[in-house]
Length: 104
Image (cartoon, rainbow, N blue to C red; front, side):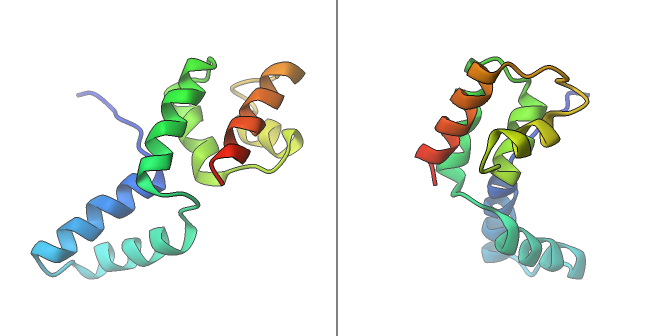
């Protein structure tokens, strides 16, 4: 089985599309409400950001987490990436934050 990491925005789109075709279960409806409240960018922006962050060298799983949280500064970014990335280089951190700021 292959695991695929998707941003909150993509999950929101999938559930939203499903809700147009059928009635969602209580759990799905609750999840959609949560996703609507907490997704920070559109699905299109999330997909673009994911590609950009992976091209900068982040693992896909970490790129998705960064997109979901959209840290405002390098300290927040370090908190998200730790313990997977323990010594984030300043230059890479700045590039990631700059990329995120362009998509806000």
